[in-house]
Amino acid sequence: MLSSDYIIVGGGLTGTALAVRLSEDPAVIVTIIEAGGNNFHDEAIDIPGGGKGLGGSSLSETFTYKEEDADRYGIKFNKHCYGTSGPVQRTISPSLNVCAIPWLEAFKTWGMKFNQDPNDGANIGVCLATKTLDGRSIRSSSASAYYEPNRSRSNLKVITNALATRVMTSGEDLVIATGVEFVQDGVLQVIQAKKEVILCCGSFKTPQILELSGIGDPQVLKPLGIPVKVALPGVGNNLRSSCSLSFFRNLTYSFTEDHPCTVLTAKLKAGYESYEKMNEDPAFTQEQEEIFKATGTGMLVSSGLPSVAAFLSFKDFDHDGMIAKSVESLSLPDTAAFTTQREWVKNENVPFLEFNSFDKLLSVEAPEPGARYLTSGLILMHSFDRGSVHINSNDPTASPDIDLNLLSNETDIKILIKAYKILREIHGIEPFRNYIDSEVSPGKAIETDEAITEYLRKTVITAFHPIGTASMLPREDGGCVDNQLKVYGTANLRVVDASILPLHVSAHLQATLYAFAEKAADIIKRATNE
Image (cartoon, rainbow, N blue to C red):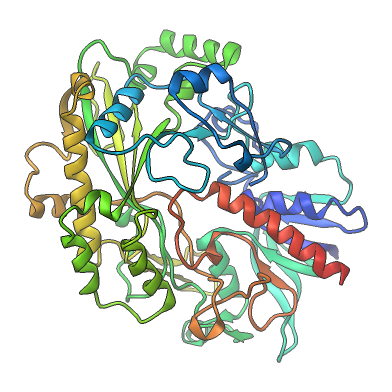
């Protein structure tokens, strides 16, 4: 039988980084079980903005930039907030899309301050975003930064294309994780855990594996014939997630969280280029590929991810306080999480809205031949919705039921309506308005609050930042893991991914997840040495 000291289920951002840190001890064997392949140097992944595989969605980092770039954009970084020797590379984007700076200037004219360093812990304002790219503009991920330099370690194992089906356990009063069952090439196998099993599967898959292993709400497990090993009603609840609303069934109300988002797309005036040319002109595409390979610049860098963003507190957009008043009227559970969220409404340092900009069509509308586009994303950072993810079968290959529960309260809808109106104001501010030909979606015909609400219900998605389905909270408050990342009722089963976050961060998750992995490695190493 296969065996390993530490079995890490999931080779995404946290799983890969954690495995590398734990394998620094040559006396232990660390094994990653990953459902995907080991394909992190595919071109679609190396180029910013595309692909997935070993390394997942990837603050230990090395931050480098050219002083002339910082001077050109008026940026002053707080160097005390950045690493100098970590594996993950971060830098200023060497290329910006044609509308990035005009978009930024329009937000400044509208009234937002320019934030010279949004990564120093205070991200309110409009800013130039940094990106996890190396000096050649190749994506710097947990796979390329952590795993690749250490893949030759004899004690670091990776089993790819392997679907974990459940955690094997023994014991009653205190459950012990004895191994992991998985399927590879159609063959059911088991790997024995000598020390610990660590789930790093993300906010959808981690609760699924827990429930398949008999850890969860008895009301979910018993009807499916799954013996209850640990009764934890919080598993799969408190979801705050990030996929298209239309992809999921409407289920009963439960808890889970993500960042709801939508877009406003405009057609650019003639003479301005956007990513659409890459889809229409093979010669131009080849030229851009050659520029990228030679210099690490060009449209393949500027179009993959947004280079500018704006973060607004409640006060920044709710000038008359009417939306804040609607929060008080919401019928919300009396929990510490919702109490904290209500307090954040009054905090001028907590962003509730994010805006960003892409030079491409991101819309349900079909592109016009020869037309060029700009899309502004608008993201609600702290929605008052909660959803859930639960298994509906004891078959590990069956997809779980995911209920994002988006737009289930009037406050979230009012915030997103206000966000649309702000973007329309931005589009009318010089010099940015000189780039805009017309609004494509939602379109000028959608003007009233009622029409925008209907449009939102048809098109809202999430920002792919699901959290909360195995929250680090007291067990009596619906928590699933303690402050040592251990699943309640178990001796050696931990969770290290975004599912442990009970409340969302006012930013994207990548840096936070790297910090999780690094902290988890310290916790586990310390426990081993005690």
